[in-house]
Length: 265
Image (cartoon, rainbow, N blue to C red; front, side, top):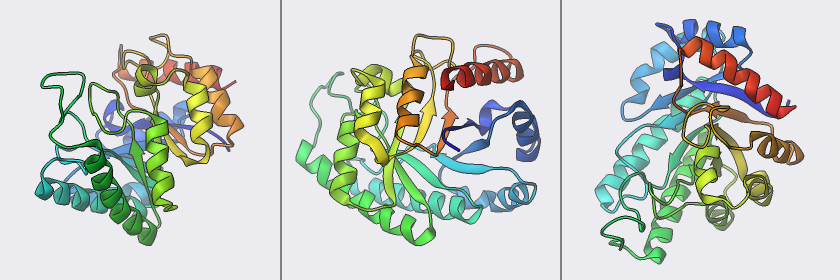
């Protein structure tokens, strides 16, 4: 089927996931992306009911202050536990995987104090260990963990698809793949389409936002080139809207799908 478009749940009007799904599926979107953190399993009754109603929930994005690349060992352990919970839940409701960055907002080499409290070698070892644990868990559950590179101002460990791909290839675990976010790529990649092609089959999921994090069509990102690369790669996953909306949600989501479908060609 190729690239399919989904929407993060909080962007869609509606009281329940079934109401949200009725709205966006009628527009032509193919799924909803969930957002989850600690205690995500508490939502299982709601999510099971939505799945029975036919709601497509292919992915869950980590929303937390606990990250697998944290400087504190206890915090890293908590982050791994949260991600295992996300992976188990998304697998139970028929989804595909869960997304995590190495970290968010903990340190940037581009902002004061400029020097991380840990070496690059230590960073890499910690990420390999955490993702190795998550990859084993995801494999048992029948899910995938997607590592998300963030821009240089939000993280210092994994900023580009090439850096993320090196980690995935070193691990060589089928359940550890990359999540490519067009907003972060607009900052970090010299050429979005070329970076996608080089990462190739490791790209399992995509986030869609324009150059200033508004919905596609509101900035200068070349989605058509990126989508052409995904098509050449035989990408068969979801591109989920992770963005702010510039106007009334329903009208913005309808217009955005038109923009995305035009870019896909």
